[in-house]
Length: 73
Image (cartoon, rainbow, N blue to C red; front, side, top):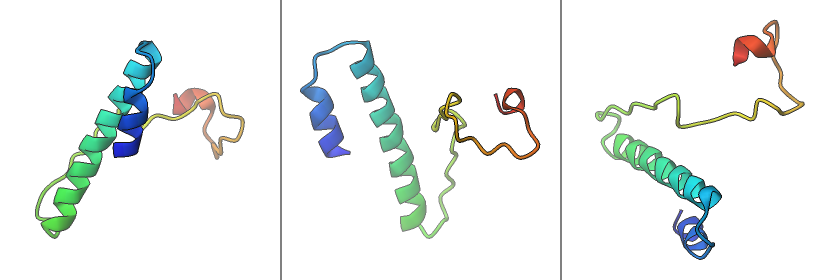
């Protein structure tokens, strides 16, 4: 994460870099939460919000089973 933050800090500031920095921040929060749970032998609760991870809905290799892409969305 430190290397990613360093790379992002050296990029010209624009909407994409702001988005990258936001994603880095979200991942740091997730990793910190998981680390706390691990080091407290799962005595600490970790709430993973559904917005932490995103999927590329335009990918051609989705395995949907009996669902349609509309149901996934």
